[in-house]
Length: 451
Figure (cartoon, helix red, strand yellow):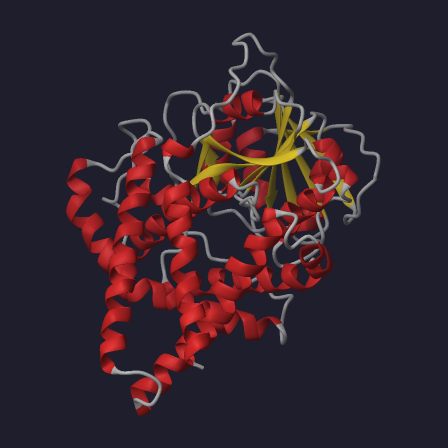
């Protein structure tokens, strides 16, 4: 038992330390500079919508400002029962449009395709409800461009996002990529690339730190290891050909993890093909503002992890020591991120009650390690975000420190509880998507172009 405890404890420390070192700019490989005269690849932006009346105006406001000339936006109204389609019509002035599709992927019946009279590059596909994966498959079919971006309805792009995507995909070996995701509630109007905590509650502030760690530390490091296991559903980029080749999205509770692992499996026998992260391609997405919605979201994420673990088990096990993505998914995600959570929680609770496994001094040492590593990890994430051009406002210093302590001593236990509950709940109900409520807030986008 003592050895097992030590192993899990070491694992829980090792991976964060590895990522903390590997994410540093010092370890960034120098890329071959591309000519500034590279052509603009066509980009189709897919936005699946199911009952998004509370946020759809913000999305349209962002999309209509796109100045990237070779792009189109396709909203997929997935059988919404609210006013989503009505609002889209009011904002875009929709007219029926004949947009062909080959029907290579499975999805529910499309009732009508519309084109905006005001913004001809924006289309709406109105279909029967089939879920997010189903809606994305329909969008892929109707996409006319070679590159496909998938966005959530509450996601808006930063001003140079599409240009950064276009530059990255000049490398013909790139089949999929993820963009960087920031929290919409922390989007500062000035400076353009700033972050602000002034309008975010403490829970959102902690999630902001969580996202900074996830993207600027973990994902940057994993991408350098060629082990990026999750392309965020809030901002994913793919070649249309690769999406068709892998059979599109699987109807599952975690379509973002699923499609990422599909891409890794797809390129496993293609030596030069790759999945990458694009730090300069940035978007903002809305996060839950209540513990109830946060818990629902994290439980869904954990269910998605378990679902893909089981579904891709043959591929992951077969390529465990051949593909970095398999190694990190199983060792970091499953052993350290799931099994260790159960074991360490059980041991700590048992020891608090009985004191039989280890001494109070060990608990003190363990608590100090958690605090020091947690604080260091949060500060590093903030510094890395600043390195990539996204800094907090000067007046946010106190709130940032407050959020760090909240993250270390309270927020992490909410997410740990979600991991424990979500893993068990998957085996009893793995179909419930638990959609998080939108705030209904009308976020203002910058007057500058959005791409």
